[in-house]
Amino acid sequence: MNKIAIFLLVTLVMVSCGSKDKGELVGAHSKSKWNSEKPYGMVLIPGGSFTMGKQDEDVAGALNSPARTVTVRPFYMDETEITNSEYKEFVFWVRDSIVRTKLAILADEMSGGGDVASTDSDAGGPLVDYKFKSTDTSNMTAYEKYMMDNYGSLGDIDSPTQGRALNWENELIWDKNEYPDEYYVEVMDSMYIPLDESFDGRRIMDYRKLKFKYSWLDQEAAARNKGNRKDYIKHKTVAIYPDTTVWVKDFKYSYNDPMHQDYFYHQAYEEYPVVGVTWDQAKAFCAWRTKKKNDYLSSKKHGGRVPHFRLAGEAEWEYAARGGLDFGTYPWGSAYTTSDRGCFLANFKPVRGDYAADGALYTVEAKSYNPNDYGLYNMAGNVSEWTGSAYNPESYYLGSTLSPNVDDLKNTRKVIRGGSWKDVAYFLEVSTRDWEYADSARSYIGFRTVQDYLGTNLEGK
Image (tube, rainbow, N blue to C red; front, side):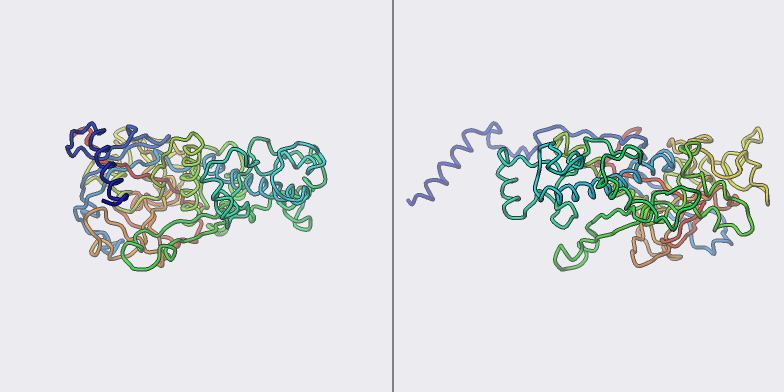
């Protein structure tokens, strides 16, 4: 018997003798117990079946939403539309990341490159506070040493930072009177609009430079087609600042300049739904939100990753909007837009030319009116919402009845749902379909995100 055979025999005996399963099939279980964590600001939408589409004749929709029974899986959904405050967090993170990257690269150049742990002004001046985090080569794991030796970094070698970690410990200085030196001024100056574009003695941030790059794997295409995995990895760079000019461009001969100037900027509108975002910007926000959560888990060494945040599919959106009330016209179930006391139940245009009849001239705070039975606010009115589905008039005839979704990246027409503050009641109906081009930004379109629920929710059954 050769040495290899003896080794395998001894190994098998040791495994068999040392096991506590008595040789029975008990399964390979994880060492830690897993519990589903409800994301902050979201509610659980239980999976189930419902009658999707119009129950009455839909002349305006030209029969593009015939009634049929479909089933969706459980998922989490934002209880409100994404607000200006929440979207600003995304904008500020991108802005700060760009500034910190510029400062770190410049500090590298000034100190001759490499990691510098010293705070000596001779090793990069005040910019040393913003250098890439030092890599402690004396305490590396075998994996980290291998990555550094073979790839020159611990992360994405194609990134501007070469995979090195930015230093977020020191606050950025935004007061121009407190800039520490001319090199810091140089970096900050690159972030503002040119002098010849300034007026009134002010220079504002050049928001055209705020771009977010992310990557994803087109898993459905990869599963359905042959080829290398890398062929299905997609990269996207998106300018993420919302188009505030939509308040002017959407309406001819109309004075809406105060909304243009203040809606996204002023703190008075922090809890109002963000508008002026394209479908691509909404998708970028989802990617960033996923990254934000996973980065936190990684820093705490939890060893887990959350399912991706994403836009709801059209069927998911309608199922959630109904709130468990099948055959209802609106999220509150009835076929009327007012309560028994004559109060409007949503923010829309109830009378021709009278936008304020429901108590709001434009949008209202995201947590306004009564939520539906799932705890979701403004699933009708306020702002229409991007979904992850491409618009096809024949979707209901061709799509599956199990988690139906038309996910066609080549189709630039994307489904929007729910109606808005400037729409008539028809567009508020939970079954009404509408669409807009993915690269369009409007003063009446926002979004909310969803996240898959892992497992099966049996609560209440």
